[in-house]
Image (cartoon, rainbow over all chains, first blue to last red; front, side, top):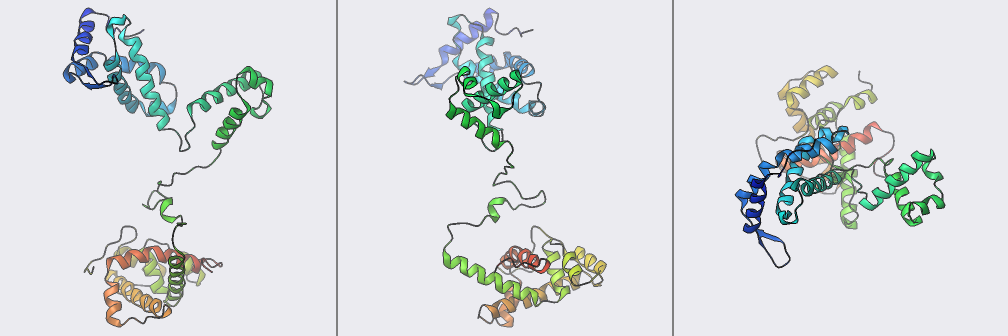
Length: 244
Length: 93
């Protein structure tokens, strides 16, 4: 059952009043409007956001986990809808706002997607191809040229889709992700820089070699205390030295 | 910058180190753990400076050992040293 949004005269009147308060620039972009009136309209139509989220984003586990975020994004979409709605065209606000809410939520979900972003046209083509493979019970690699022509997908596009499908099997890790839950260090911190000068590289190698030599000159007890101080387990060194 | 107390973000406190070392068979308390750490670092500094051709004095070493940034840098170097100690292949040739 769709929610009863803006069916009454009062709401249409509010939208008309809101339109009058809007000041647009030469490109038709909203510059100023009555915020109080907009908030009032948003409050009146808040249930529409819940309805859209419940209807379109209630199946996947990920959507359920992100429900609160989706509701917030949906409300942002609702604000856009309020700004753009033209009551004089005679359409219901819910018809217009639903698209804005879905657009806002979808763009949020795309941003939250895996690290390697797949463009929407590739995703659409991928979905078409997957549907085809399901229908005809064939593997992705068995898709022929004729089938591609049927779906209006070029070979170049097919190659892009195949590459996009391949990325799913990659173990992609963000460069800013901590290496482990207990460490603040990220992959970025340990990847060697290609830009460092040769002299810096030589110096750091010399220091490292000297440090290793210095470390080997310490007693086992000193080594262990130093390592433990920095949270490095020294049991392997002790094991190597024959200490139980 | 010199400071009486040096804290590092990741790692163990002296009491934990002392407890672990005692478990390994090196009986000690937290104060001993600290003394061993500082003397170990002192020795470490001297050996490094020798290898790099610049002999540090006792006083210079003592100053360096009490510096927060030196402790932080050691946190980057020591894992590599420990790695070579525990594995047969050298990390840097």
